[in-house]
Image 1 (cartoon, one colour):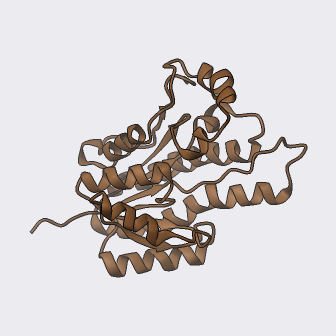
Image 2 (spheres, rainbow, N blue to C red):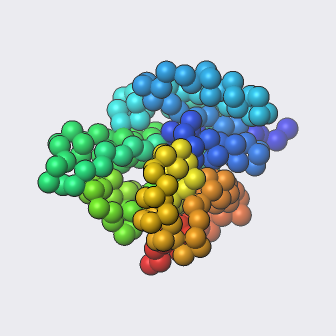
Length: 248
């Protein structure tokens, strides 16, 4: 009997997270999604996914809290039996120029966007090593590569994420665990499409050479590849998927 691999997607109920969950299930994984304690309607998301033919497991966790993350992963392991892929996708923004940024704006972004990567990866590596392999995929951002006005906190966290990726990739390579970063540009998610049309047409789209927003499913396809056996030789990479907005 073939063992069905398990993937965990943090922030799995957002626009990109949902696309990743769906794509990984179609690739044959059993998929678990985390959601924030502030999320008041996880059952609504799960029901909507069932209506589309997807069945996911959901775990409530504060990904910025180490003890809560540890408890959640142990619960997942006890229920699912294994963990093969971790997608560190959870993230928030608290945009302000540094002159106006409050300390809490810095702390909350670092806690959710960067501390979470340590908290979850720390729990994932032991079972992955014991299984003889695994995948850790960290969702960064084009703004971690090029910076963005009003995002010293977000850009710093997303840039640091790839430094974490490179170091952990070196540590895990001999264990068959690959660690990679994916850096999307502007995607067609609710957060991006909510900006005024004038801002979209005059400031955002002109930055993107292909002339459109990216689709979450396009990023999800890349994540699915990095999760696959075919990607076993890819590790320590930062793969841009931004329509040509930034090339390095």
